[in-house]
Image (cartoon, rainbow, N blue to C red; front, side, top):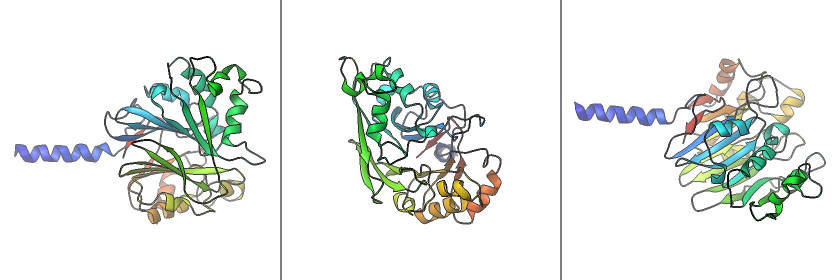
Amino acid sequence: METLHTLLLSFLLALLSGLPQRGQAASCGPTGIWLQVLGSGGPEIDDLRASSSYLVWMDGHARVLIDTGGGSAYNFERSTADFGDIRAILFTHFHVDHSADLSVYIKASYFTGRDTDLPIYGPNGNRLMPDTGAFVRALFDGRTGAFKYLGDFLTGGDGDSYRIVPHVLDTNRHVEQPGYQDERLRTTAVAVHHGPIPALAWKLVFGDKRLVFSGDMSNRYDTLARLAKDADVLVAHNAIPEGMGGVARALHMPPSVIGAIAARARVKKLVLSHRMRRTLGKEAETSRYIRKHYLGPLFFADDMDCIGL
């Protein structure tokens, strides 16, 4: 009987480890791969959410930031993460609600003792957006940047600072491209359609675990399902309700498209984030459209949630 009790307890703990730790979680679990939602909102200022940002933990250490939307730096602090542990920052695109807190992180990092270079990966530019290198220089260049007093982070010039090293990926090529890699982590990205804005979806691979972020996208390029094939977790942005048209639909995918992608890719868990006022309160409706295609675990993200892979 005691052995049966132990087995049942172990099974229950394993089951619960994959469920989100809601809202009040600080750091995620001490072992394994975890996704923490630093910002589950969009560009609105009255949704009581930080804008889009995600933190990936590996065995108790924060390793990767995906986007740095407004308010995310405060939630990074709440997470108890150490910025010195971050191996790379990955940007899906440079709309304000995905990038505004980058300068906050960089300034704050001066007080963390970080001494290793920080690679930043993101898309190329066009007439509306700078490429990743130009974006970083527009903020931190020592002669022309908005925050030129932080110029040493581009050059490592004062001897005490690390260097920011930008890397540009080409969204004109709709094929998977390599991003940051180390001994335990491999990242790749693919172009996604976000209206006129150059944008990427990201995949992070840790051994046999796969974590995919859609970013903001309309799915006109039909590239996400291939990137997300057999993903343990797909984070998809739920910015519009079913039936919305116009500019919003040209930028974002409705629930039925999200569900079809998740089913086609056979993802193990689907997390809906970038939740805006036009989708908040419509979770039942959203679920119905998704369930027409995808029947796996479905979670609606809130700030500070932790989701195990």
